[in-house]
View 1 (cartoon, rainbow, N blue to C red):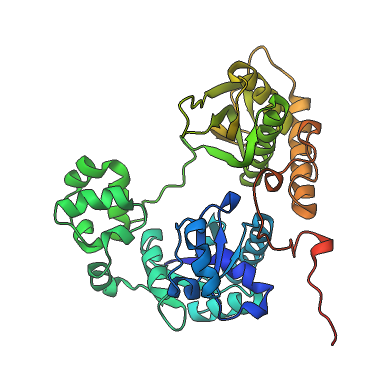
View 2 (cartoon, rainbow, N blue to C red):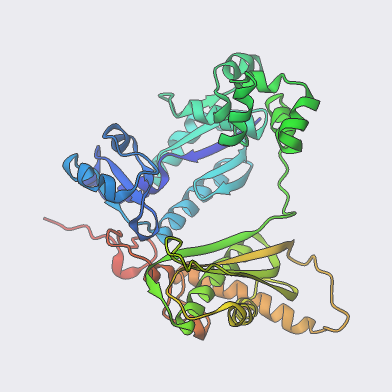
Length: 408
């Protein structure tokens, strides 16, 4: 058996954790620039405010129905996520984080419903626990667990046929909307119907990825965690257009720092950096160049990324009003797996740079994102590039924002 722990309405739950006055009220969290709803708790959904809606279209409805909105506060969410993951790792044999609010785990001796209660009680974040023979089945079990009073569900092999018969194909992890439409056009509406298809038919229609999903539904562990062809990206749409070359470069370096820290955390390195800048897509002179730069060798060292970004920007920049920027880390490798260059031999510098990257990541984790960075990006973080009028305090990462308990 493998388990899945999933935080319920995670961003909204993080906001409610420090606001007991919001208990029982609808809460939504907005995307960058307060554009659309990315998270809505149960009460918000009951009031008609659901994920994906444009905020300006539902703003007045939310106010009338008492739904509280927050701008995204990612340092807070990451901090709370770390707490949940730490608790989960202490109560199970091994965990495999999948996203900021989900982690697979190898079950320990504690019962699923007890595990769910302890993590929810100790972290303050409501979670659901699902167990199945594979990760895909654990995902389905977790979906059922959200509707259970105990918040936990074990999908036993004997019950799989009945459960999969009642699971819509679009709710199967790894299928997605497009593939579900392909299957439904051929009369395949449920997870069970898909599981029982001929392998050759699945390969022809959905390639090897679809076949792996079918194998998982049959109880065969076929989910591969591979970094081959993987990539990482960081980007943003600005709150106001940027024209200056220097300002644009700063935004790109800020994205590169995010990628540097992500790679370091996962023990990975990038052998190629790409940038993309773009103007308003609603204007006739829409401009969105995409430039790649191959690095001497894979790394996660921010100054190396910064130099590559400077070179790429010098190639594609022209004076215009830019609405956003993105940086991509491509050609991903496990740290230490590299093909050395015959004409480059500076192992000491490489080791020093790796140590420096680790230290910078630890400092920023402790004191807040962007507190330690390169001089070129000093004072600039994503928070300052975007509109965030409804942002909550950084309760867990900034001393000045610590919540106060007043003795009345």
